[in-house]
Structure formats: structure tokens, C-alpha cells
Length: 351
Image (cartoon, rainbow, N blue to C red; front, side, top):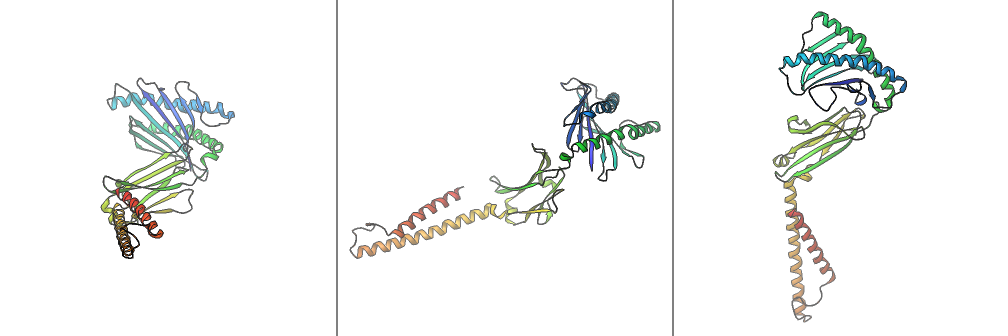
């Protein structure tokens, strides 16, 4: 399905912004802007110029009505909420949807004042039914009939007409499908000796995606996860990241962690497993200690062999001192390699 939504903002009080402004979105693509400075539509896409006058006329009907209604309601709501001084913001989100079979869907209407949800209206064109889930102004029978008439004969026909028109013009943008790219990231937490794992899906379109982190095949509780917001990329695609902190104790328990995602452009669910064992700080330290001990044992054996070899040379009268004379080539190379290996292992252990 596709939607056309208008976000109207009415500001009470002195600000550098227009008193009234509207953003019009086709799905997640901005196609129009309108405000009280010019009272004209500004197109944000390559619109067809033959629809310019019609768009201006439709905007004059719809947006002027929204402006007048929001201005009237503002007087009422300021008294209701005891808001008199300062800057206050009244916002309205209204629009319609077109279903996958090109059949018109419902029309939606939400109001908020200073970030507080105040009203929600849904009109079902097929059933001729209007649902008012929350209202800040009491509606009598006559007012309900008026709003139903307005939705059915003005708002909905214009909304569906504009939705179909711009959907046809922008179909290459709004109907494209781009698969997500996935990255798994691990970060050792030096303070707690724990580990943070992150699953990042990026570069996908449309924006709807289901990204889930699992521990031993069970979804991790939301209160343990950070992130999860869908954020825009600069190229018109989207990204989502979810992260989980694993304590040192949990790492020692050897749980299995994996990330799964579902997207419109993926034929099947994508499932990727984290290899947290490689990042277990305890296992890393133990392996480093074992490596150093093994190398020290090898060093002792080489030095012992060197002493025995020198004594044999002296007993045979082939050298005046214990370490006189050149070392055999193989033994010299072994000592050099051992020195480099010990130095490298010590540095890794200190890190």
C-alpha cells in the first residue's frame, strides 16, 4: 500500500518560523511544502507543470480549511489546558492510503498540542463509518455529519487524486527495492571485561524492516537492547542498528547469539551468528599465558642444548671459553626467531 500524508504545524507565539506550514509526504518522499508566508505550494520533486494550477487550487481548499480549523481550536485548547503565555505548537497529521489493488483505503486524522495527543479520527469510506477514538472538543450529531460530508466529498477525493498522480510520477523512487547490507560488530568493554555486539542493517529501501537479536534462539528483551530506530542515509535509503552488552560472566556461559532480519526485498529471513568466543577476554588471556609458557620451555631447551654443545667443544680443545666461536647456523636462527616470538607474545599479553 501507499500513503499521502500532510503534516500541518500551527505555531502560537513569536518565533522566526511561519505561523502555519505543511509538509506533504508520498510514503517517505517529500513532494510539497506550503506555508503562511506565501500561501502557495512549493514542489520538492520534478512535478508536471500542467498540474501546477490544479495543485494550487487543491492546496487552497484543503490547507486553508486546516489552517482555519486549527486556529479556532487553538483558542479552545489554550483555555482547556490553561495555556496562555509563551509559544505553543498545534500539529495535525492527516492523509489517505491506496491499497495494493489500487483500491482507496481509509482517511486518517491525528491532532496533538505541545506534543500531547489530543484527537484521532479514522474514516472508512467503504463502510461510511467515522471512528473518533479521542476528541478534545465534544462532537454533536450535526457536527459528526458535517465532518463525514467533508471527508467523503472534499478531503478523500482530493487526497486520492493527488496520491495516484504523484505515485505515477515518482514510481521509480517509491517503488524501488534495495536489499539491506549487514554488518556484525563487536567491541570489548575494557572497564567491565564484557563485550558489546551490534547488528547493523543499512542501505535498504523501503524503510520497513524487522531486525531481531537472539540469545540461545530466544529473542532478547527490548529493555536489554539499545538502538532500534530507523534512520535515514544520505542517499535515500535507511539503516537500523541494535546493540547488546554481554557481561564477562555471561561470556563464560558460552551462549549463542545471532541476528535475524526480514525485509521486503529479501526472499527469506536472513540469519547471522555472532562468534563471541574469539572476543572472550578470559579465553584470550589464558591462551596468551599458555603461549608464553610454551615458548619459555622451548627457550630453556635451546639454552640447555647450547650449554651442552659448548662443553663438548671445550672438552675437545676446540675453543678457549664457553661461548667462544661461531654458533651453528640452525641454532642461531632458532635463537633469533625465539627472541622475536617472545617479544611479540609479551606485547600482545600487555595489550
